[in-house]
Length: 114
Image (cartoon, rainbow, N blue to C red; front, side, top):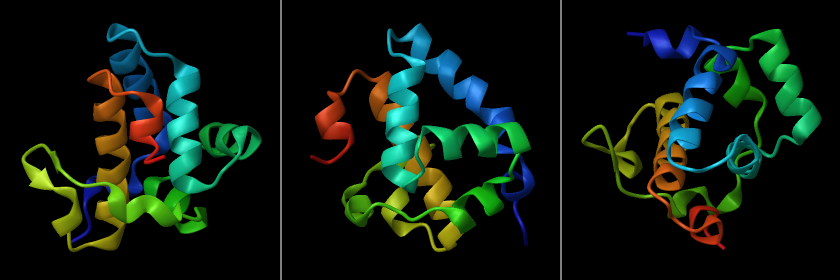
């Protein structure tokens, strides 16, 4: 069964991430830094994906995940990200987890597993 989020555009969820983080005193630039760390995209590539309304499936198909991605552990919506079986869903959960950590005030170097 394919999840609806797979065919949802990243651009439609991105403003929700920005809003969540800005409510917590974080910035769009910090969100972009986290997304770029996770995916390997630079500012221009991220902007192109947002403008093209790339789906999460297409977005992560083109991404080169950070080698430290396995250090992202914990729960999102009660689900342990390291135990998610579907590879695409796991990547989406990694992103959600990083956004949650930023929103909770974690230092950027900890969020980026430095």
